[in-house]
Length: 250
Length: 274
Image 1 (spheres, rainbow over the protein chains, first blue to last red):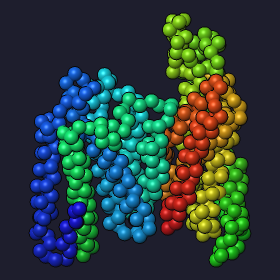
Image 2 (cartoon, helix red, strand yellow):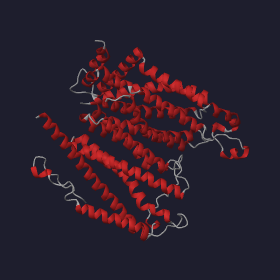
Image 3 (cartoon, chains in turn cyan, brown):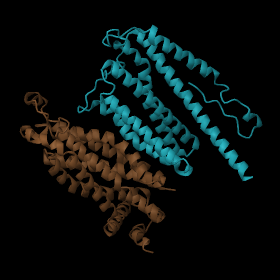
Image 4 (tube, rainbow over the protein chains, first blue to last red):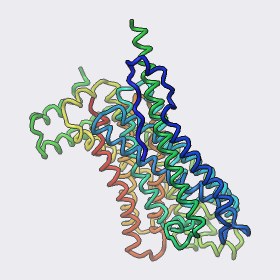
């Protein structure tokens, strides 16, 4: 869908003058326009939903909460894929992409927790109910946090950082997988969340689809774009660090 | 140099490093476990550390649950300590519904998890600290090292669980349910705990920072494991639970063990090798 804009080579003198955002204006316009549409649509296109309060308004959070919650798992999957690629090929760029995706995943995970908690407070009367999905997202937050702890502990151990963090992501993939497919189905924990409402097309009205699908697209594009920016940022800061090390060495 | 005594058995086992065959691989893993057990019996660092930790924690628990035990006499009629919520309404007594058999099982595993994450990193950290890690790296393939360390941690955890669980049951009055199923549950629980603790120990030892990182990396991985374990425990303490349910719940627990071991075995070489 989007191609990474090629970064100018470090050696070219013109490379230093290029603004980092150059070439990204169309992403800005596209994601911005889509996001504006989603925010407008959430309040003015989609109607209130049956069964959500007397006005049906709490259901509008679906346009923000669900894409963000899905993304918080997608980010983990992408991070794990790049982790495997790094272990197989050993390219530093794969490690940077894996770490960036997991950092973004942590942010999306926090957003999903906050939006979900607000919804739970309004709809179910309590901000935290230990519903399986709430438990899952809390565990997911923990997994992300401990990844970031490992990453920061290895900050000056560059030789091992990539491999160790990739291995941790893969080991933590086991509980993460259980969170998505197993924990919500355990009879020991009962869910308040609507089951398969969005998966079944007959449950959503056309006005909801008209906002929800663009919302998924908008948040996914935002994620891809942020990932590119973050990877670029890490690359540039590493390049600057190595340039400074060279200058100090001379 | 006394240190080299530890790896002497391994060097013999790795007589043919060019073509490692399967029996050689197993013998290397067992040699490593044997060496760890011998070193452990000599110093008893891990065993005493984990043992004292566990019994201190048990002591704390016994004191902390003193208040909860008051309600136990009222509950004698309730089979297996599982609370019938309706009887609460009938008698009006405060039965503290959270302190049921499943809750006790959960607390036992919290205790065992903390114990595991207080001492099981020792086997890897010790190799790094004394510098025997390079000799170990040269004398056996990564897979054999992983298997050997996992086996050692598993045995240590079995020993701890075998001592702690009866004492815990005496203190808190946790019922045994069906003894065979309880044994299976403890087996699956120790397996998952040892497997998680082993791979995280390898990571933490390699990352070079001690205990703080070990707990922070390991405990988040155990939350889902504890959920599966409690799910199996609720089957164990349900009167007349169907065999299918027991198999499904305990099987779910074992599937977690198998997955963690599989992922660890696949990725261990990236942690271990230079």
